[in-house]
Length: 230
Image (cartoon, rainbow, N blue to C red):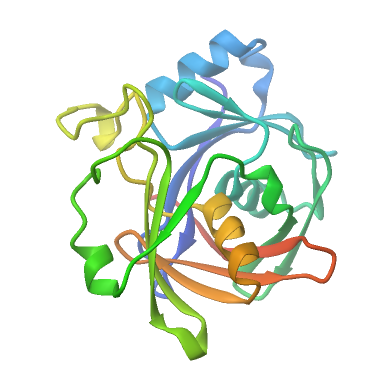
């Protein structure tokens, strides 16, 4: 296997949590969509990134069973790992910057199609949701923890057809059909930020942290901490 780095993106302040991401730094060993999809399914992370050109930041993103033109945590993770100011996923140029412990990208909310948000009355209601909640389609469940401060509690449920039912005994706790709950979801955070039109500090999953800030041109800055997975 070509070199594979496993990262955790959108970690908490203490370095824990974050969404796992596989990054194949030299994608020549996976020359076509079928081989890339096979590895993404084998790893079972919510996304895996294949680096086609490390100098220009050309990357290809796969979820188990799906090729993605853009996804938030893979681009943030790749920007941190490759130490680049520009990345090129399928949607086009994405600018990146490092600000102390945070890595930021600028992205368009419309790149994150299919993410439906639903507001709940309290963070406790979000915490109490079953895994996955009833219904179909991608769900980003959220509630205010402190509206005046822009603090949000969120959980994300892909609810893809054939996704994991929680009984999988895959390697490292991963399912080849993809996770039933996404620990930290940059694309959904972009959508929610655009809907609310304000900067957000999002606590998602078991304790991941995502920061966002809308820009005047309609784009959104998306930021978080990235660490190598132990």
